[in-house]
Image (tube, rainbow, N blue to C red; front, side, top):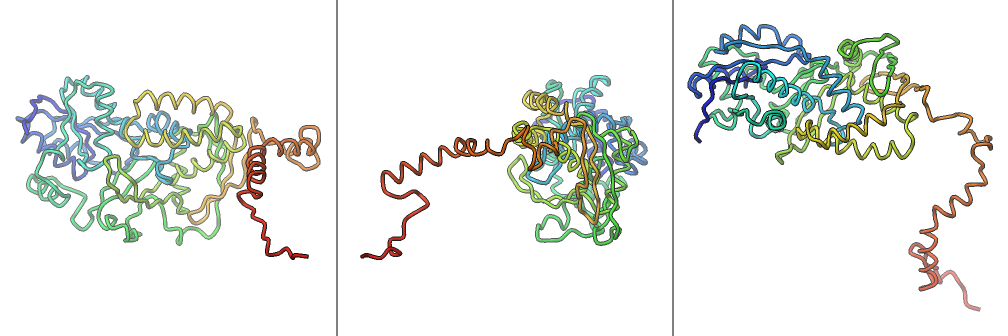
Length: 421
């Protein structure tokens, strides 16, 4: 394949196995081009330590780190949680939401630095390559994209380790600890290693954000989350920034084994992939938001919103964050959230979340309306006419069947029970 000509490249850099070997590979294969490493601080914590020294030692001209935690939560995580978006029943989209933000900042950095290309360490089999590159196409399609996993001879993580050893790049991974992980303030994902066989139970030592439910406290812990127009704003009565709220709730929920998910998902490219996710705070907030919507949204809005949630999740998973359809769906979601304010109390116990209470100044639930004795709002005698109208299609179908053949679909007279005179 003929290589494109580039002078300066912005590389999405994590300091992990893949991106560590990409720095020297880019310089070796693209005429000693300048490589600027970019790292988005999304809450990786200790993973950011020593990155600058490592990037420069690998051959990069510099490393740019941006603290994007607050923007990630408020502009990407919160809208997705408000939408109720869950991919294939369980995945709360922790990695999917982060990629468009990272790619957006890379496009902006490329413009500021005069770079003519960006590069990423996504494999040719995964979803992230699509998420990065669709964002670039949406924001600046004139930028060239270099995806080493689609070009180089490295075909496994073991190959990458050997390549890194050749260029004296220190790595946290070894051939015995071969998990591929992605961490941010919202979640931590695990792939590869023994997880590649879906019959294998995850090793307990693999988990980093959540304790085993078996070892969680024997007493439940109650938490209260206050929402304003669908966004969590207070934890246990204390107003907090998005970052501080998630940080505290991650610690609380993780200590009770909350937020573990083990799924086999359908990747966008067509193959199935097994992943294990830890999303402690996100799981609690998702459940609390559902509980609050149940008293704040009317029946038809909530039911239609459930349909929207599936499509919203699909768009986010497939890297279509900057597509007009997602933005249009987001406008609908934001309209539904105007009434979603209130407080939810939850009980956390050994991996379980139990809704213990919910209240809202805009609640549509009224105890006096729902009681059996109230007649001012709801007259029980009205139910007869309602049932007659609601069941009219069933009644007409059955009458036509009986008139035509003497029996309805679900009732055939048993003539054996009748005696002849």
